[in-house]
Image 1 (cartoon, each protein chain N blue to C red):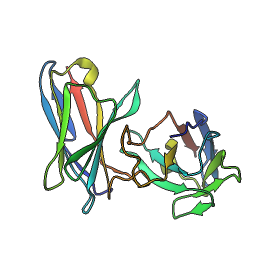
Image 2: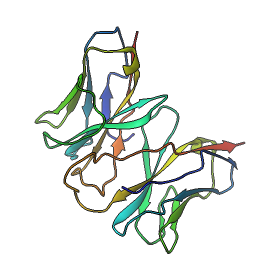
Image 3: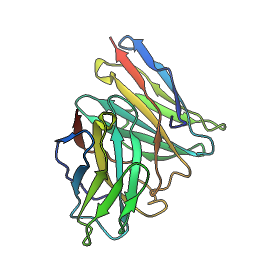
Image 4: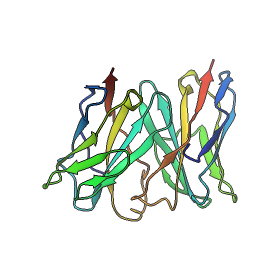
Length: 116
Length: 114
């Protein structure tokens, strides 16, 4: 799986859009971009994922650049409950790669702090 | 609520002891994953099972073992416990254990080794 780079921390005002960047310059053609978040000491929570096109769901939007080397997770109206560590993960799109450590590889993520 | 159930929520034990952590996956999910999260290591993948069979191994110590039972629940056994084993242990599940699947995580078991 390709490596990702995220800023260690970010602040955002409550009610504003939070834009979290992720660089994945070594991403290959069949790799998806996944975002998870972890609110303090809780289990990680799936947010969204995408391959090439921008994606939107009830939680967030994912914007992937045309060259797929970077992406941005957008929380449109951040609330205090969105304070968490956000993980950007690149993952093969094959059904099963056939061996090895196939669990998601979590890096250090971005600690997003929503300010009142 | 992710639908993944982990018990117990907290466990306090002494060095040298053995403990068992239990995980019930979401209804219909066949694959179970175990992760360890300590303050200095972050989230580390330990092991994955699919429909009772081991599928992938990560950074799991030889003192640790796991299994998935016919009813699809899983247990993680930690033996000869050391102070450094103190951590949050998470279980996750997915439908078929494929690479391109969402993982749903439980709320974790906090293990304290004294």
